[in-house]
Length: 166
Image (tube, rainbow, N blue to C red; front, side):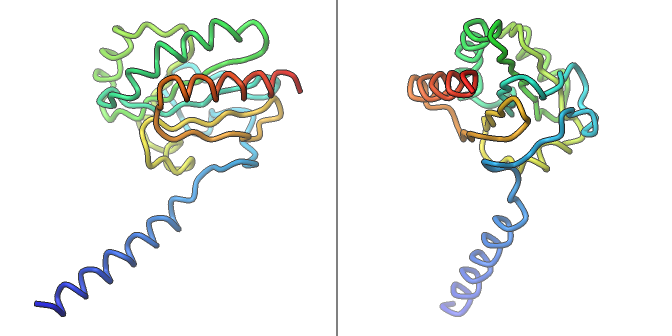
């Protein structure tokens, strides 16, 4: 029994290392393409270049995502006229779940659907929500995992202001 436990623990450790290796994804200083068109998203996904962009990955079943949406809307309203945009990418498997979520939240920013999961794989998303703050040149400058209420709002506000000032 002890040998079985040791073997299971070793397999678990190897799996964790492999998962981390293959899920590298985007990080700070990752250069993104100027368009997300190659990922075949359903819905509007504006060009990245020339705008400070928050790319947020979310799902309808994610409670922190539900809490984040109203705050992201406030950020969008506050900084949108200054060159800031949000692209909130749904990773829901079923479009109807996404649509019900959006009908309740009513965001004014683009919310494309990554039905094929191509963009979510490229970005290496492991936590919901996850977001990437991208500068005007299309470079990921800040990453965020999860939603931490006021702390997330303050952090994003400071980072957005920093990037808009560049």
